[in-house]
Image 1 (tube, rainbow, N blue to C red):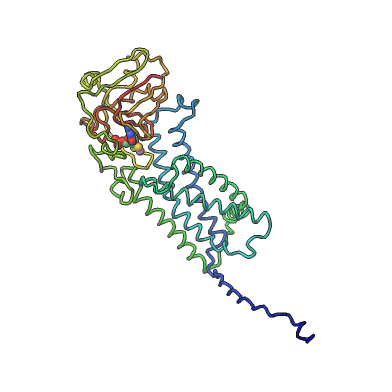
Image 2 (cartoon, rainbow, N blue to C red):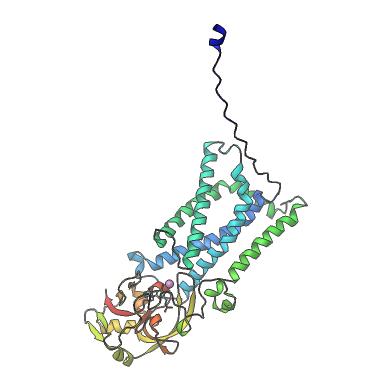
Length: 392
Ligand SMILES: Nc1nc2c(c(=O)[nH]1)N[C@H]1C(S)=C(S)[C@@H](COP(=O)(O)O)O[C@H]1N2
Ligand SMILES: [Mo]
């Protein structure tokens, strides 16, 4: 009896989970040297991307103090900056994947967290990887104007850029000893690789370089027009569109397919307000200018425009020198219906209310009856289907 009572009841044992086979990394390319070598190219690409992204943001939405000092020259400034933004972002994609491949065995380090410092370091890498993937992915599909998400692209892409920058600076600071050793060994000529690793490492770096070259060459022609024949993968081709110029938002998408010429009036609001018919506008001195449309989504192309100088219209309306102007489109809704232009742009002799494009009357897609064209401006502010100018 007593014997039996003392017996501990048997609890059935849970089966032990099979220990997951941990991947074993035999290749020697997953080392800090390879990560550093790819990392500096990736670093260069994201630095260019970050700086040109900032430029684009502040040119598009300048704070009040900046609005009147933003320069209208060089005429191709925004085109270059935004072309670099999109090209460096695209080039960063294969670089990021190559870099992640070299470092991914770190995911499996044991113990996963050694100390508070180690834990924070890993957390910062997680933020960095997440923000990088997010920025490159959202940026890429924005070039195709595809928005499969519930948030608004511009503020989120801009905000994430700062999250990314913070995580990057932290990461470089933490990895500084590795980076420094790599450069020291390189400049001292003592960067030694085990003999059998040399060819593999070279293949990896050459392969990554070729991938960067391939994605660049097949897309950069969207803004670097001498290479347009090779533009096979970019969403837009510089030659596809009415009157030899691409169109981002068409007239029918904007509900502007047939603006009645007879009833249309340009209204200029200022100290001496006035209105003009299209015939009256055509009778004013016509000025020619050769300027690009440089779309934030990545395509850009030069075109020949002609029309009436905005500066002349503002003077006629009694605008004091240094005035800003607000431009309102006929379009009922749309993010680019209303635009403001700082004094430097408004006074530039190349800034026009354009009536003609490449020798023809503007097509509806390009903004008939009248649109803005100004130097060194993002495409989004080259307002089409203009109805009103307001001196501010
Ligand atoms: N009123 C209005 N103007 C607009 C737009 C718009 O949606 N509405 N799109 C802008 C954008 S994003 C670009 S890139 C240029 C393109 O000009 P294009 O279609 O004549 O090439 O027009 C700009 N002007
Ligand atoms: Mo655009």
